[in-house]
Amino acid sequence: AERMESETGTQQTFADERLRLRRLHEAFKKVLDKTFEELPFETFLSHFGEEFAARHRDYLFDLYSQLISMTRSNAEEEFGVIVFQQDLDEKLSKLHRMMTEQPEGSHGVTIAKQSPADAMRSARMTLKEAEKKKLEAWLAQVDSENDALRPL
Image (cartoon, rainbow, N blue to C red):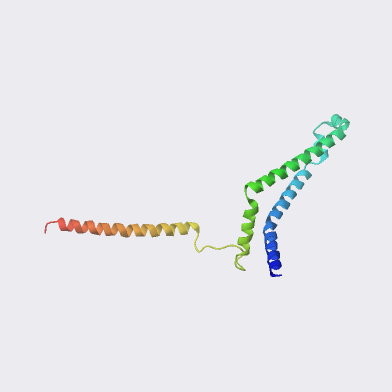
């Protein structure tokens, strides 16, 4: 029973992680739907002139349907290739895990104590101060050696 519960929990976690990928696919499908809504058959038909369009309406409708079908199919296939090549499934799963691991109330954003520019300035300042101390010690040593060489 414990193993079944563990497997169910693992399956639920996997399903939750894949939610973002499903939503990405749904958004892409909506983009395609909206795109093809913008090119209705009548608009397609208007590009062929009235006489030609009237005589070959059925043929042009078949051509239009094939064009839409092939374009949609090719776009979906290419989208699948991009998702695979860019490893979006894993990246979106990692994003989901990162967001679920954030403390409650943090809204998923870790706020740095310093801006990146201030952090870099601070790091450079630390290095410059260390360099300054080294140079001051070297100058003191050179001054001491110079003093030893001067006649009294």
